[in-house]
Image (tube, one colour):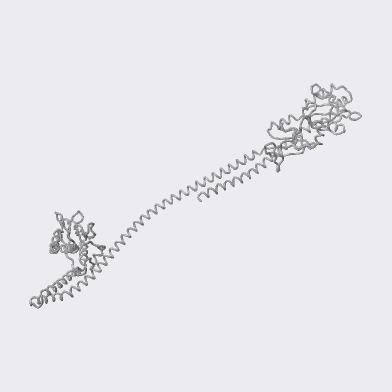
Length: 574
């Protein structure tokens, strides 16, 4: 499909070339016809002029006193000399006088081997026409000289009637030579269609049409073309001023405006018209190609300009896409922040609600629990109950007090002042709190602390609570392990302080830290905690500007990592 416009352009150019060639050829061919018509007229005029130039000479000679006297018996010497001088001055082939029997008695060529004197020409039609009172005219090959010529004859006007016939011979050799030298093709045919004169010697004495038997007998009787076979010329007349002569097709024009029904045929080549037509066609094709090239160049420029605009637009589009990508990323970041903020708000709302609930529950349960403990103490002192039963009830009361102590964290409304403390000291205090649990489980704790202080700014007691909650969770996770182990690592960098607690327990499973931080969510069995430890710890870490992360360890167990920013150095007071 992309090559279709090119193919259509080629076809259109070919069609245009054909049309231009035909139109230009018709025009130039008409010019060639006009030129050929002019040349034919010129040739016709030259033949007519050559014939008519001496048409009155025999009439004058027939009334010349010297000619009449010689025809009536005077000696021929003076007339021979007179004819010779006239012939040379007029450029005639011959002038001669014939007696009434047709024998030549005086001639301009009397002193040449081919003299007409003594020759009988009574058989010639021109002699017979002259004796009958008409001017005789006839074209034939001379029987004496063998040279063709045009004969004109008139009867000599004697005292008592015709006393002889005077004739002239006009030779057309000079005219024929001029035709040949012109390089054109022209021929003169008589009334029988026999070629008399021709620019091509091969065409002479050939016939344009087949001769009938009667025509051949007449020609033979007049000895018009002795020794000639009179074969047909290889030619064929065609329609619309065309003819084939030999192997060539030529423009053909003819005229019969000549005496004796003669016809003059002119043949012209059409090569010049074809050449000029091809030249015009080539110029048109060149112009069309040039126009096409100019169009293609302009189109290429437009395409280039459009391409440059497209590239510019593409660059702008890329920049816009980049800006859009940045904006999309900013929006995504904002959305993530919004979701995180919404999540934090939701958690804060839940914690606020939990704080209100915790305050209410703590307040409502505080006095009944205290009363129960007092009654249990009184019963124990009074010996009113069995010791085992009192121990169970006392454990339940202790458990209820522990729950209310945890709930008190959410109910606190005051904020404790932050102070600098060593994270290592908080870790040692938390380890001391869980020491009974470690001893009961027989767990092994590996501790890795830096030698230099890991100073934080915050609430030491609350950070101890975070460490204690994480340690208790870890101890709960390794209860069922054969070799319970915990690994506590404290690290310090230039930008942050962190501690990491790893255990070899059951791990987090499919739960995530976000889910585990929700209040009342726990992975332990029912009755082994309320799921508030991580929620409390996460809230404390956030209050200190830190982050908490949790993951399953590759070798089993869970890893909890808490990171705090290093507090900025205080500038000395001025």
